[in-house]
Length: 294
Image 1 (cartoon, rainbow, N blue to C red):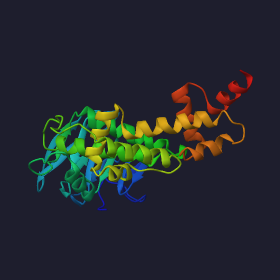
Image 2 (cartoon, one colour; image 1 turned 180 degrees about the vertical axis):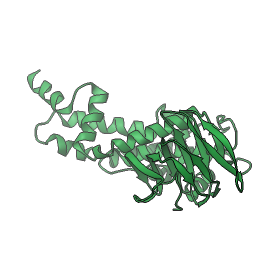
Image 3 (tube, one colour; image 1 turned 90 degrees about the vertical axis):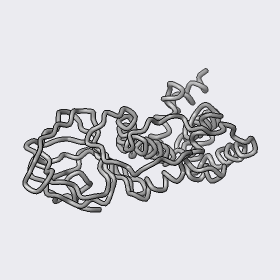
Image 4 (cartoon, rainbow, N blue to C red; image 1 turned 120 degrees about the vertical axis):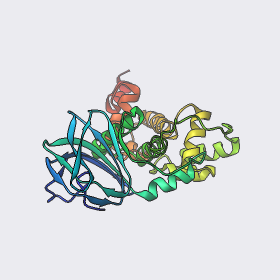
């Protein structure tokens, strides 16, 4: 990855340093960076970057031609998007906290091939955009990174990143993300195969790509048509199946709570407890105890 003040730079960089949790998935990284005040030289970047400006306005000067700078201001909550290219020199006088997401070109290129309709023109850089969908997805992803110690499943991350990539494809072309014109009908035999796959492999770390392949659709189309048919996302449906199975298994005292968690596809006791409590309003251990005393 090219060295750049807005990228995930080595620890000895004088211009940026990581602050807080981060998330890494198949070449995609999202983390908070503290951008240090100073003169940032022009750099070649080989990734797509999203920077969500936080806490206070980001003020500085951008080099538009050699030796000529113009002032800029980026308000809190807004997002800047850069594409692989030469990044102009920047001068700043205050440290700034920003949420940075780096996306490999191949991730966005492959995702574009999966979309329900082709979009015209290349991705354009966004000097500043107040895109609530991009902002919400970036916050969900960094929260996912903060919760990684509890072992959240890969499908949740993959689904959020697919949504982020699709939204960026529209936003960077200044296009409204209108519902695609397609037949929302999910053939029953294909849907049955996907649901059987979920039931048969509750204990495995199923990915969105695996379920999409089972249906024969791309990830983007599979997510859309599944939700249209079932009323929930694939990840939400799978999570509900796992929690219902765990609820049944808790009626037996022959297995420990952690063994039940692993048997139902949860990667840790903490992940299981958090998900179960959120769904049923009580922790698994207390739920089991209530059955024995009820």
